[in-house]
Length: 343
Image (cartoon, rainbow, N blue to C red):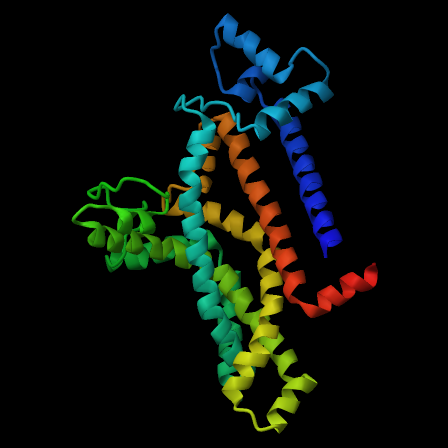
């Protein structure tokens, strides 16, 4: 297992290096001065220009320039934003928690509702119910996320007025950021209106979270259904039934743990699509996360913000994919058996 862990870490480092190399090459293709695209300083003084050339070794060959670029980025120096004149690292740190909050809430919705519905679709003898669930998931998978977000905003935000359609919280509530997670910060606030603020933050979260959860929800339902069908046909399940164990006990203690293993693996495979959908959702609902921050940087031609946004999203996807792969191998006996057999 330790050898496998070392290989995964090596894969993470190698993939990250390739991704950073591609980003470095793309940075050199930006239609601006290279010193500006790397540092974000549009009109540097003579002293600043010299410092930028030293930091990024602009007068040396490409290999040394890439080494300097890699060193600067990995040390946390992402340059400054040409629009806000603030450090890009500081801006990135301020928008990451909002994206994490939205992603975690969406993932919770997808798993919390997707797994039980998938189990029902697998165990139900009602063919009409099975076909209805499969048709619903296929429809949800096929709906464009931008259309779904705009439609939900129109229905529940504009026409019915039940839910807010933009932002993270009403501007009337002045909540001091502590963790960056608005639901947590409202409860940690010492303000007298922290409960109404929490309720308002939760209402702001519902529409974007539901919109983002549709894709993983449909996949979780279909994968859970197929996994449960396979598990329920296994010999050990039939043996448990023959011993007279209650059906609910068989499901909870024997079938569900094994059926959820493919679900975990599918989550790792959908991270890229989930991230791209998240960017669209953040833009639609004006959610102050990495996605809307990155798109705003693209519109404003803020080159350091573009690099930082792509770098952060890519590294997170690579890291989480490998982490989920490790978890899948650790809890799946069949994977461990194949792993040890390979040695």
